[in-house]
Image 1 (tube, rainbow, N blue to C red):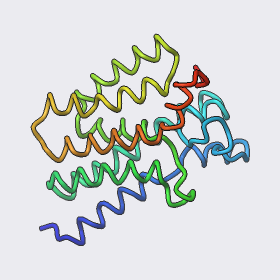
Image 2 (image 1 turned 90 degrees about the horizontal axis):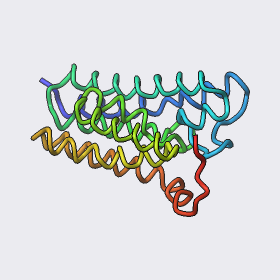
Image 3 (image 1 turned 30 degrees about the horizontal axis):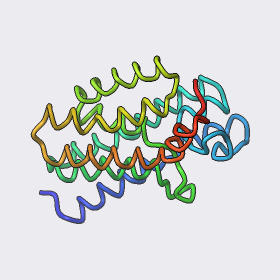
Image 4 (image 1 turned 90 degrees about the vertical axis):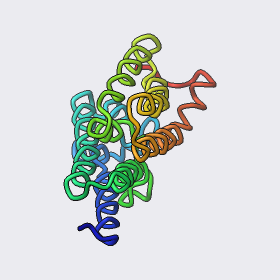
Length: 196
């Protein structure tokens, strides 16, 4: 039987896992620089690839996705409570965007969100991923593809699942990712956003 304290611990562990700043650590290790002083200021894969190269960007993408995936898998393994699993998913995403280790300045949450929904809603993630690829291919704006895909995840979850905790996690996750992209939205509106 899972007690309330155990549930709280699971959520805290998910936050701490999500807050591991892989992009920051990779760039610091390879060049000694602070990734938050480069480009968009985020610690995610796109910004890392601009500062440290494509290989570093891909590694950051994989590690950020893995921490989201593992955080949710731990919650699923320990408890079958869908609300706790949803809370752990949100906590992992909050950890990535607002990491305690970096003064609550992290990444945009996209890769970590991919890892989370790869476990929770793989079909919804695939549908949103197809649209992400299409938008990036047409516009060369990774940020635009990420924002649209994040917004569509709750739509696809709603269409494909009747789990209320999952839908709420998707809605909150989308809101967090869009909020993290607020600077990108301003640059997209003004025509100054960087293309790939």
